[in-house]
Image (cartoon, rainbow, N blue to C red):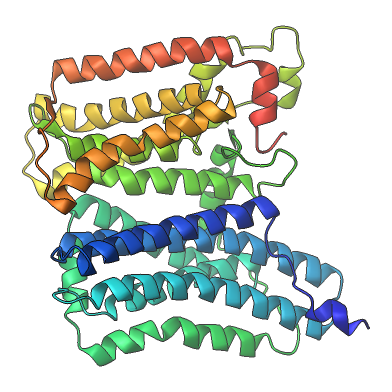
Length: 453
């Protein structure tokens, strides 16, 4: 056996995924460094909202990292199990996978902990490591179950709990209150929570130390029926490749991409719900819409498409490809937005049926349709224009948050959410769709598909 091959680095992810992860880590690092500069050099006061926002961003980054790392674990288990790999190779691969997962957790925890160690911080510095460690411990259970290292029923139970927790947090809008109660726990409890992931990583390495052992177990009839129904529904959708991704590289399981697309938009859309007819659409809301636009660029879907239809003369039913992409994406993500809006209406305010309750559902759907239409058009532009448009999305973010952070006097900008606002969203959506339908072609769609069936 060649021992040098065992000691060489084992690739977990494709090259474009590694580059994307490094870019995301740099962005998080720059954001934390800028906030730390404002706290220590400029002397700005540390606010609870800024720290809570950073913890939320870190949780989203950690969740996305677990999703991609779960794909790598599943591929590694299937390949090494079929080829009867020696125990040394499996141990080296598993150790590298655990180090990769732990590295994300450590970097994010240290970055947020440094912010919480600044003078006047209202949060204990162990809050972020504890929250991220618990999140990673729970999510890794579902990842191990999907890879076959734990019973499938355990994974289904964990996924159901995570989904219920996400819906509750999205509808109650009490994340800051819950985080404050968690941060008020004694330091030894926070330290114990922070050590949950290192302890579980050691357990994983010990339980799989000798050889690769998978757990056999079939789901119950009810779970099997629900799973099959969901897979049939999700199988009708195909995701488009991420922006600037390598066309020859494998994008991974397309169902995982569908779930990531839905979760990321839902996570950012919770800040836009609820909305009342007649309230002011401030610059902060426009900045949040800019973030949703950025996530929509990598969350575009197309439904009921077969590769043979792209080769037929005229490309059957593909005369308006842009409209088809927007309708497919909306049909996948709009039900989640409607559920969050209804839950927010039921939990946060008394039930009063009328124009106000209708606006709480209609306005977010129009905003999502506008963002999706603009990003559908953006995907047809040259690469330089795409980069310029993404950078232009930073303008609302800078205008909304930089003056508030550095206490600069700038003119306040606000629009009233009413008929004019809804008409503006509809007009922008129609204009973007009109241009996108002219630019999208069957050839361009074939090149943009992440999975071709």
